[in-house]
Image 1 (cartoon, helix red, strand yellow):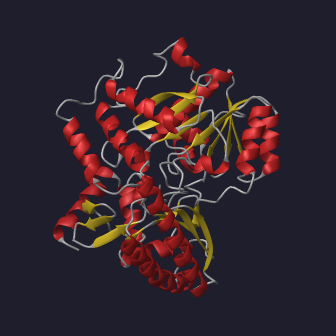
Image 2 (cartoon, one colour; image 1 turned 45 degrees about the horizontal axis):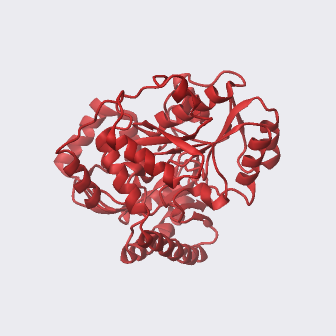
Length: 432
């Protein structure tokens, strides 16, 4: 390790986040990102990694995508963040584009600076529209770390800051449990159901056939709004612009973020129906966000949306998905006692291992073999494996070759090593 990198890690512990810095090092990951380009990142010491984490999908179209950089650079000749109080050319253009790219009936776009804030907006909008406080969520779900978002998610994130919801304010049911969800909705006293179309932080378990369709049908029957959290699954990651399209449903509220920024300028958005956005007419000052819908962020978002709609991008996603499907099954066949499950929808993938910390071992081995991917916070058996939608064929094959080596090494290590998650404090050190 170079002196410069060692000094950076030391100062990170002193001035930034001692717990996270120390835990990554204990996991065998001493990464300090320096240079980055499309789907490659370089450590401070010059070692190159293929990025299969993408910061949750932020780098869906790559690090420092040249088209996004060009658009934002040109925009800086005229625009800055803007003023959130007033009508804006760029905000209106993005809102119009999102209206075109979502089903008929989703009318207004409300902007945020990040996904957690956007979830807060979605839940506030649902509560206002329905004049009910209760919200139905999934067990082991994740929707962000801000006020309502953290309450809606797993206690892993809310308990630390005494941010659990009040009794009966948030009702959590198991994912893919038809009966439990139907029972929760049929009470008719909830403002909304909020679901990540494929729960990311739980390791991308796929919805059972008919599950999301049933949830939407029950919401309609009992007059409860349906909120689709597409922060990690939208923007062509499943082969459709939005993952809910694979299930033929129309949400009342949709949340997008992360990749909408192009990895260049933070922006997130909530697209709502006329009913769900009723507060916009009643009191347009009801929610304010100084950096929500920043005009430079809107420029980045417009370029991202344009790229995602290109026919060739759909073909690339379909190719990557199939190549990964075939390659992953071949690797699984080599280690069937360890690599036991593949969860895949497009380039959204979760790899399941037969060890309580299996994905942590694979993460470490992949890191040593030049690939960066991350374990699932709420299920460390599962590795989040997130390919970018513009990944080239040669890089795809390179990833699979490195994964084959890493899985074999991790299988051996997992059988011998003590637990990696023996934290001093409950929940400490898990990845986001």
